[in-house]
Image (cartoon, rainbow, N blue to C red; front, side, top):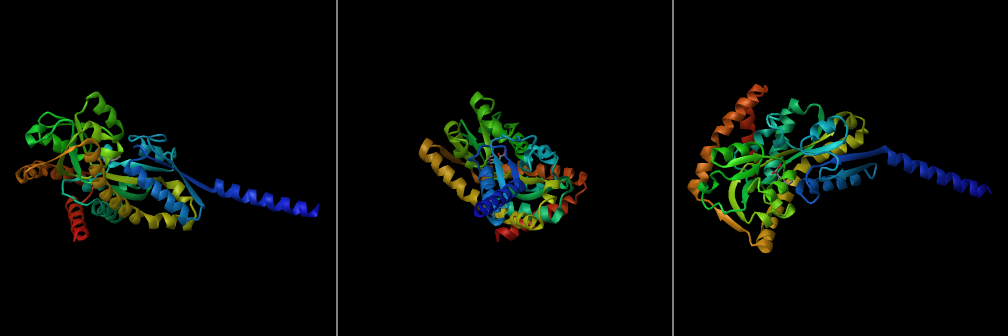
Length: 333
Ligand code: 3IO
């Protein structure tokens, strides 16, 4: 009888302890695009690392595909605590994040790892006030953007009047090139392509496979347009309530996660393009050097527009841009 009582006590204690641990820290993490896309792949990697490094003290519950928060209410949803963590595409909030949008300028990034590390370093240095209400966990960018279209873009002139889905600075570049940029989040693009609202999109090649755009957009034109910036943000009160060692674990992951995501995407975009050629025989079109020069000339006014916006927001725009370019050169060396 005594033994049974002891056994029951031990069992009760074990149950209680694990119940406390479970109730302890579960973080919800919202994401807008489908689970197979790179923002969600990096989310799962972050979850795995956090659960491992906190030895299970923290568990992360992920919500891909706008099941908890969508592309346009991500920041608000995290600030109000609907989700603890959210992945934000900054290009969907024009004018709201002037400091970090510096990496969305046409400065010819060729490596996503470089772009993501530059973005992280700029964040650490400038601590932009427009992100002060949240805890920033990591940042990264998409890969350099190209045109994926239903019809071939053999020369830049073929862009004339063509409706292409994009966001952020790329919309203005498209306008300058005579195309019709249509702004919308990635998660709304399949329907717009299906309905013919747009005839293509400008983004990185991972989506040829992950969103199956290779099926509908058989022509891929190499344009080397800007990368899209992303930020992973956490409810500040929730972060502040975490034990110190957990906070440190999350802090230590910030830069590492940016580099990991960049490397993953650099590798993955080539795989996705190869897959698209194999599965749908997509055609890759190259522009001439003169056409690349024309894209550059016709993108130049964007830098001026960004400077004006960043200055209005209280930043030393020239210094910010110079810092960004110096970091880019450093990481490219
Ligand atoms: C992107 C966004 C969501 C899922 C996969 C993606 N690959 C590249 C991007 C960047 C982009 O076009 C956007 O809208 O943020």
